[in-house]
Length: 564
Image 1 (spheres, rainbow, N blue to C red):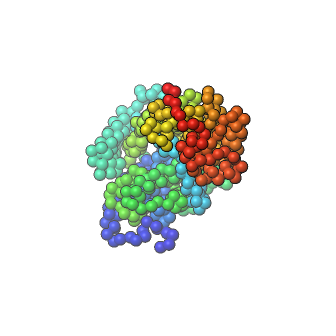
Image 2 (spheres, rainbow, N blue to C red; image 1 turned 45 degrees about the vertical axis):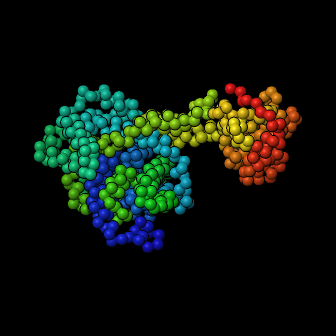
Image 3 (spheres, rainbow, N blue to C red; image 1 turned 180 degrees about the vertical axis):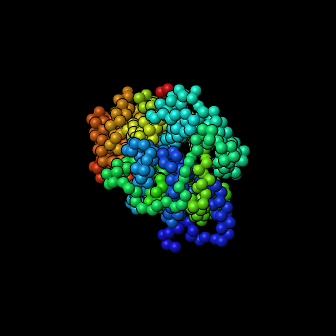
């Protein structure tokens, strides 16, 4: 088959039954959720169905995962709404066209990244940033759906403004809407908890439609979805200008990064379980092709779904044949079944959305990051001791206050800033000889029973030495050399994986300064790359194979107890 349909390579007939069952199961989940996620994106529910078939087909054609299910998702749908909403007022035809155009721009960005082999970019969005972003996004989605659940007016603004708007208008809630919405929410959450094998979203949608038909609830003021165009979507480029396309580029890149990170996590999870490899660059190509197809078919942005991938895997899927079956069944839905969903209560659709994202509000996971910290960070660097917790909350609050895409970039910026902040002041441990040994040395701060050689300070730089931290390390060395009675400094280089030209020259300057003071500077640890750079930079620092060898060359053998 060459490049196409990699997940079908070596396909076995025995896999067909599992793929068929999985396809039917995923379809039962995808249809109501696609309708719901389209409403998050601010477009007609049918737009979600338009996006699914081309996305599923084209991902299977180019992607590397056998299990990943691609389609409309809450996070990227919310990003779509925020990106397009910032450029287009209202929700008319131009809004719909810009939504499709955003999918095309997102697809083009992912295709370019895949062809340029930029899959490593996913590493720059840390897991804590994604976690905080998803929690903030889920809260924003929920507060945006609560007015539909209660039958009250929705307010614009950030999360807190919308939440305050709901609170102020609780007295205006419509009793019938509240009853239907809360009943739908209870049913879908109850089924997910008590009968996880049952497609809860499809069941509650069917019950909502049946209730409207049996009791004419729409005649009693209950808002329903209303007319949904049946048939297949029009295929072609959306009616937007080149200036519109240009204005979508930043948002498209943001959607691509979020969608890629979320989908890659799901793909890797099931690849590990089934013992096969994921190609990150092919995942970019699959995501790009899926979004391009969705946009050209009047759809919306798509990405890999962890929840639907989990349904797919647990139902017995072995390849992307299950995804192709979902695509066919979704086309059948568009041709024959859209009329059924016209009677769907808006409150029930809101309940499906809330139930789909409420499990993403994982405050315990964010709080748990607070317990993970570096005890070595102190003083002015204490703020950076919990970088994961800080970055996660920066992304969370960024989403709640500044909206989705700014929140993501705030989280990424804070994460990278903290990384640089910590790198600029690496931990420099003072070592002492472990009692009862002749050549083992450990951190004096952690093990005060260790003994420091008389007149020799042994320092271990626990990071690469480069331009950003060279001055901080220099100050630490000079401070150690100023201690009474010190006549030698030994740098243990085994924990220093690299050194750049700036740092090498700074070490040479330190050595010369210390020599004028009558203090030796010696480097221990046979680290080839470090020694090569130092030699090529003209550094004359004495290098020894081990710390013990350096200590023996620098000082008498008598020892003293390290200060408390």
